[in-house]
Amino acid sequence: MDTAQNSVQTFAIERTGGCLCGKIRYRVTGDPRVHYCHCDMCRRATGSAFAVLAWLRSAGVSWQSEEPTYRRSSPLAQRGFCRACGTPLTLAYDAAIDEIALHVGTFDNPAELEPQYNHGSAQRLSWVSCGLDLPHRNTEERW
Image 1: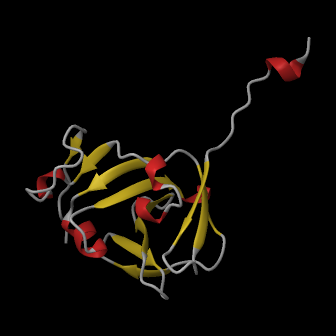
Image 2: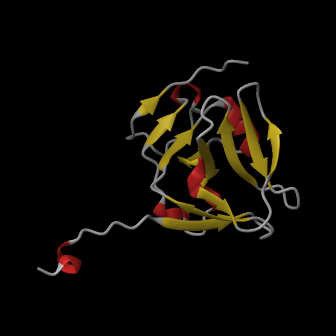
């Protein structure tokens, strides 16, 4: 029996991305959980009506150039950004040290990362209509 023909092979999904100026580049492996986040913290951190985040295991993210600059955005989390161009790149909660979120807009092929649910739905701006058919999860502002 030819074991090569009968073996099941699995390949980790690999994606790349980076900041606007190209100074920071990353490579990720794994299948992320992608969602819209409507919480006030994400709105303010991105300067937009909502954030679109891709959550991965921290071990699946490798920085191909320099790492982001990190700043605390609340008592619960820190965010990473490019200090040269200001692109917001990451979100990491203190309570989930093995996970990191990357902003979907920083991936080289963001169309591959379709949101699966809404987070912070109670804070969704009334005029935001994308993702209305997706599941909704609420959050509470804790600071």
